[in-house]
Length: 275
Ligand code: UP6
Image (cartoon, rainbow, N blue to C red; front, side, top):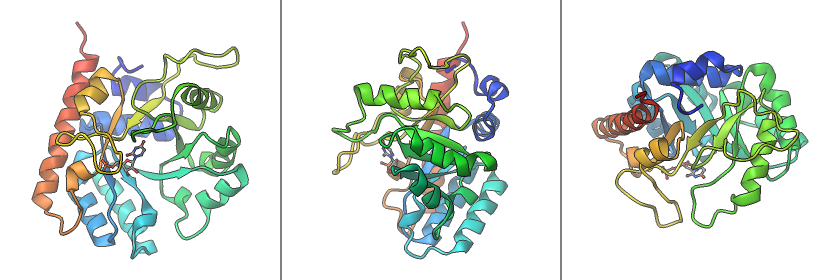
């Protein structure tokens, strides 16, 4: 599917969150998702306001905000409508079905009420999808499974990755894609896998133009490597856009967002180029 355009794929996608994301990518000519990993609500909202016009998706870790209250979500939703981007809470659920139901819908954050997309580890097996789907599907949400991580020494390799893909194939109504570094179509279908018209979105974190990693095992690749060479669909960029995320210089953040947007789009154009 990655050789088709985003809009061709949008037309065929049956999950509403995936379809909306593909439409926004094409409309805004942006496959950039900014990961807004800062601890003050003001910095959080300032960054989102600045990068909003340049992204298809805002990725959050809502639990790192020190001064969280419900107005942050109201404002986030306003910005999502104003600038036409979706919201992805990077919650990385990893528990049994009945527990993730509570974590997804209850508590302080009520993630299912506002995040179009969230994600989960495959570690607990298919029951984690059953649990999350019971909350998310009625709200037209989409789930991303972590198939590969970007950090050094990650255990998400080989048969683990393959089994995660098989779990996704069994729940294509709700699982819309993967956090990964490559496309997953190459993973052989088992007898029970339904792969007809399969179109999983691949969202890739670990993207940077100026650094190859950080001091804690993060590994960066360029948009060209991620989108053109590896066929991923969305680039996720955090510190490459706002650095430490304190006393944010709006002009600089906008400049970096535009730079990553352009690099991601160029890599995509090169990929789908028809000869
Ligand atoms: N993230 C990764 N690698 C993964 C999965 N998720 O880096 O395999 C998330 C991190 C962070 C963001 O939790 O929010 O993507 C990357 O941020 P950075 O660009 O500042 O390194």
